[in-house]
Image (cartoon, rainbow, N blue to C red; front, side):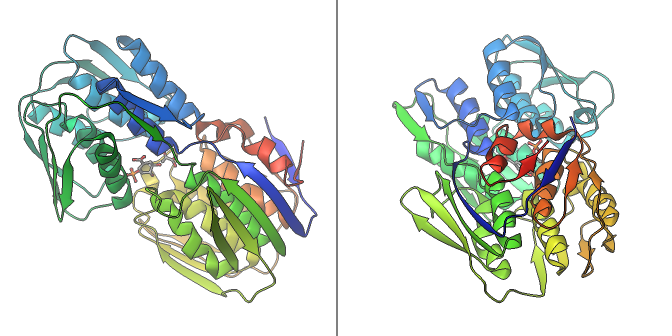
Amino acid sequence: MNLSLSNKQSEIKADLKITGSKSESNRLLILQALYPNIQIENLSNSDDTTVLKKALEKGNGLIDIHHAGTAMRFLTAYFATKEGCEVEITGSKRMKERPIRLLVDALQRMGADIQYKDQVGYPPLIIKGKKLHVDSVRLKANVSSQYISALMLIGASLPSGLEIILEGQITSTPYILMTLELLQQVGIKGNFEKDRIFIEPTQKLEPVTIPVESDWSSASYFYSIAGISASAEIRLSNYRKSSKQGDSCLAEIYKHFGVHTIFEENSIILKKEKTKRSLRINEDLRNSPDIAQTIAVTCLALGMECKLEGLHTLKIKETDRLQALKNEMQKFGARVKITEDCLHLAPCDSLNEEVLVETYNDHRMAMSFAPLALKIPLSIEDANVVSKSYPDFWEDLKKLDFQTQ
Ligand SMILES: O=C(O)C1=C[C@@H](OP(=O)(O)O)[C@@H](O)[C@H](O)C1
Ligand SMILES: C=C(OP(=O)(O)O)C(=O)O
């Protein structure tokens, strides 16, 4: 489904409830499968959470997790330790191109029985669950933090817990800290200092209910809308000032675009008033890769120069996001340069009309370009991709007077 989008409003006012964080939800679902005493509130309604939940319920045979990276990585570790189960975990065409070798190598060194069905290093995987006894493992930390979180999530269920030694520069660190905080919140002890993580063995937990905070990556699109509009007041719930999600750095970053965040009870209010904003932005997003597309498109809309660094993981996400961003921003007339880990957008003072934005099966391509409709009507190809993380996205945009057809 292609969607035409426009919005001529100069003032945006709205009050929305955003679905639960998919990162928090997916971690809690794995923990709940290991420790049934955990109750979860405000679970994400994203496709990625739904497939993970269904996979855990199925527990055997062929499991298709479509595009869900965290589900692929977390379930690999989970099933490897699940004695007696036999699964084949597969996914979309793109999932079969997203590397998993570092995690599989680590699990195999811990004694896991995992085989590649087709290409070595990539899904599908055939896993025969068994008891793992090794209590210390090393792995490279600069490719994806999801491998590390996957090991942390199963760590406490192993007889002696798990020590994880990280090699090289650590990427997406806030996601590792999120895993640790959730473990601690459910009652598992662990620590993370420099390059060493340790998770204590825990056989049983006291009953506990964990409320999932709403998704900050999903909130990013409303930060972009506020930043692009002349005036905005957008209330989003349920959010907290002390968030576990690294993407809450949006509140700081969007000050450059004149957007101020007010934390009020369980909500954030994004306020844009006619203020001076920066002419250029320079950010290292090593710790928050999922908001790179949002920030780049906000800059495109505002004619701002933008240099984003620390983007080396973008090439192995739902698509090669660096190339996809370059291709689609160029259609609007932008001058964009990319390297292995960096994107540079030159200031652009007029935008081409009638652009069809391709989405490359990537939810964040669709959602990050949508706010540009405040400047110029555009179309989004295959708009349903948003359901990977935010199924209600287009319905919520209508509440902000976006015309969608
Ligand atoms: O652990 C998680 O929930 C995630 C970690 C990040 O991946 P990488 O660690 O691969 O950068 C992030 O991009 C992804 O959307 C979710
Ligand atoms: C990269 C993402 O997800 P995953 O790696 O879990 O597929 C994302 O949601 O932007």
